[in-house]
Image (cartoon, rainbow, N blue to C red; front, side):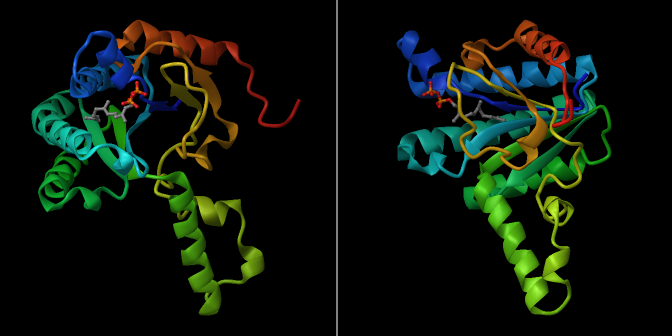
Length: 230
Ligand code: FPP
């Protein structure tokens, strides 16, 4: 069983398009899928579920769509807070969510604080997240320490970088799922995915249900993980 599963939730737009609905309807259905995945992960005994809700590249979408996504997040964090508490799910954020403005940021931080003691599942939501920026930030921090003589540059190893990433307190990523048939990582958890099993499925994110989640877990179980050994 993987301890840490991450998902690139892709295909909301196409799901809506096929139904002749506005894109926001796809994102709304996608938000329902997040709740289902969270439940499936908790039921399966997964410890951490990380979802890519907004990438640092998503700002390139239309103003209207960005506003819709922000609205949805606000709605979701309000409405789902009770679910998170009831299901004993701890919310954690990665990325730079401050860019969404004080109101949404404060609500998110409140939900993080109010669920901090929960221990059944950790739901990590990546908001305005970009993996290269995350690694660059760790590099800047280490360079600053080296320049101030606080560390020896030769002592900078994988561990030193990993400990400065926003995921430093999470178990190693075991399984990364991407929906909707796209086969790329799109700047998501590049460092963390070093030894993760990758599962790509044709299912559009709003159609990704508990059975689909369990199918990905079964695929993971079939793979033999060698971590570079034999
Ligand atoms: C990708 O579909 C999905 C997104 C960019 C946003 C994901 C957001 C949610 C699922 C809802 C909010 C999340 C939470 C945690 C409340 P796409 O629009 O790129 O689909 P397409 O490739 O078919 O156009």
